[in-house]
Length: 324
Image (cartoon, rainbow, N blue to C red; front, side, top):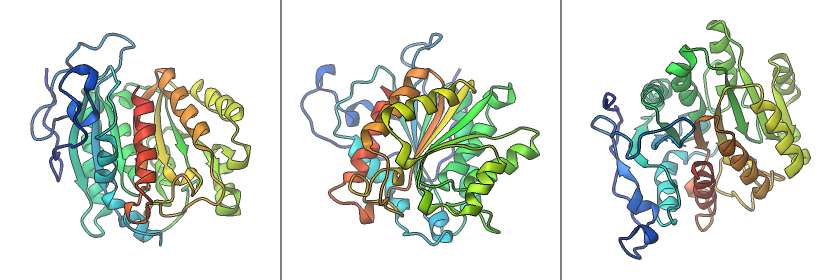
């Protein structure tokens, strides 16, 4: 049975890309992605068997409000369109359906209302057996994702959901107003209020870019983390494997500033060091192969500061890896 229609602010727009032919052997993302907002979600083309790939649904979260509140470089509200533009011309090798639900947008400073709307859409997607792929937006996107995951049947039925963040920052700031720097402390407090404990791990923490207070908060919350300087392929694999073993399902969030500035210049806070792209890509393959990926988002792309679309292309490549 189809699920209720999604409520978004902007319906999906036509995708574009290079045309090589209509056959499956020529297919690119722009030819494969189909719209799904404004009506009930379409039934999967192939019934999902146990362990098979769930249809993916792309949802944009156009928000600058959290970055602005966090005194960062604004421009991330334009990221969903930039990532779609980078995905469009790529060859489509996936065996799952991919749909586009359009965008939830944050008008002005109405961040909390936008997060709530996105959370409802994400919960509906999860409950309909879809894999939501949220395109942020600043990393305030993560709290919208959390609202969706926490409100889903998966959590209501007692599934142990872990949050894995690929990021140079803990984003555990204790501030009077939520921002792109506070989402994971917000999650921890919401989980505590619900009688649960946040299972949170971070790959790529930059020691010079996180204060002692943030490290103390991470310690108090039992956060597992791996410093950027310690992120070899082997150490990252071991770290992620240990975290995956503790959970039934995973919410993966990628803050593109985890990558070196030479790879991802188009972010609010470019990394002086960063984790090499091959390591981040390997983590994505590991997560995809685990069969535990419940929800994912990509945040902090700022097209205004990108160079040759470099950061958008990296985001698109990581998404294809996670869905493949």
